[in-house]
Length: 427
Image (cartoon, rainbow, N blue to C red):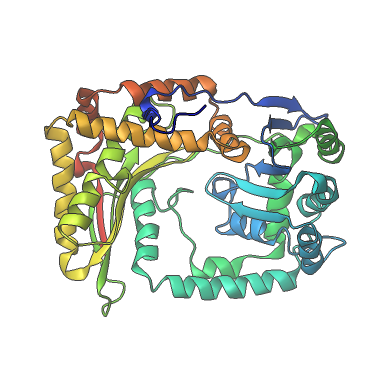
């Protein structure tokens, strides 16, 4: 009989073992890789089609995100309304977006309905109509949305800091102007779709509770389009061109009461051996709600509601960014405190108690990420899209458990020299 007078033992996350459940790889008849993770008791499934069709691939500003946005706004045989009805009939969701590197199409549904919905997705991917009427509506909305956003200091500061770190002409640093939206044509979307939404440019990720019949259904619908030899694409390469000046103060709204603060620097790629220990260092600095930046600038000084530091590890370049909004009269003081906290991490070893707390925080979050097929597949997706394996995951776990205070200080000396940061406030 269970003895309820004895409390269970408390076990810290650092004491757990961490194993990434294996992911199967299938190759469809036309060469598309299908990564499958069959886990979970609930009868739900998620399928993601990922194309290298992001901003990195576009030759005309705005075309990648516009193409993704209009994919399900009509096909050769269905209107946007009929597509939405076909998805909603089964209580499913179909989301499409494009980021710096990829276009992502995500279908979430009950397993029993997958065979009804896959033909709709096939149609959306293969036969978008890109009607001029839908494009005109999209452009009108996008123009209005951009005009509103350009009044916001946080939005403007994000545009500028990317351009300072990567270069205004770099895919990760360029930003969309009103005239870029107006210049988009149906022919631009058709051409981008034809060039990049192809079988040789696609990977499929399937997770949840599925059967062999579901796998066969995907094979039959998505594995039959043959890849032509002429479809092979040369990799695109761009060189970053960071700004020369590192200190920037921009007035966007003279009547505004806040400053949008961004401090950022180019950072190492995900495959670099320093990446994992630097992540621990950054968590201490500004990577969670109990961080030093939060404790000082929010809790002690009361300058802001929240401040964070995080990595933006894109496929071809990375950035370390500190971001917050503060009252106009204390914005410069906020920057001084960020610089001071970076100096403390460079100059003083992290106390062992604080380091253990942060290790448990990082590993505790990982425990949550390993609970459920969709979140586990998200881990696999990050590895696969960056050319990494489960060994990389295992190596990171060892680093999170074993990293020392001396290593943290070394990381801070390498990557938290604020002279290397672009220092921006948009008022």
